[in-house]
Image 1 (cartoon, rainbow, N blue to C red):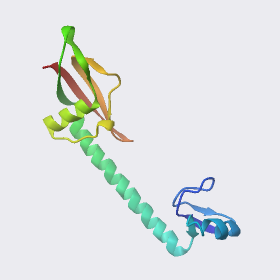
Image 2: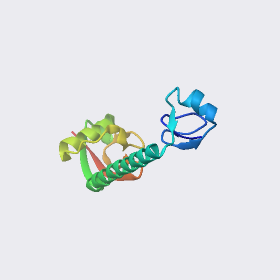
Image 3: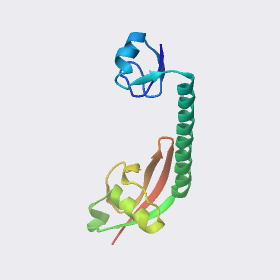
Image 4: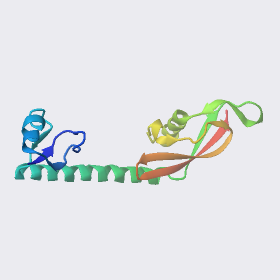
Amino acid sequence: MKVVLTKDVPGQGKNGDVINVADGYARNYLFPRGMAVEASRGKMNELAVRRRAQAAREDRIEQEARALAARLDKLKLIVQAKQGEGGKLFGSVNNKDIADALAAQHRIELDKKKLVVKEPIKHLGVYNITAKLHPAVQAEIIVEVVGE
């Protein structure tokens, strides 16, 4: 019997998959638990519409990420920090400091979790920071750390 899964079923498939299962397994296990529905023509059409809508949504999100990446790419950001002798900072500059400076200087709201700082910034200077906006989209931000 062909069924459309409405939930993830371990060992069978994920939500939205169309699979062949034994009649008894479908009637006695999947249907009563709301894990699947019979694969009728109407359900198949509904599934196709949902997949197209999901693909369009993902495409729109990726396009928005590409537009933001174009704004961010090679953007120069200045972060002020307290310094000691020899250009060494008291503490370090982290993702939150960079995200706050980005919002204050360029009015771009970006989640601090999307910024990748390879190692803690503990000295004055210029650093390249990667912003992962989408699995397929990244941008480079130039961060200059200056003393207060």
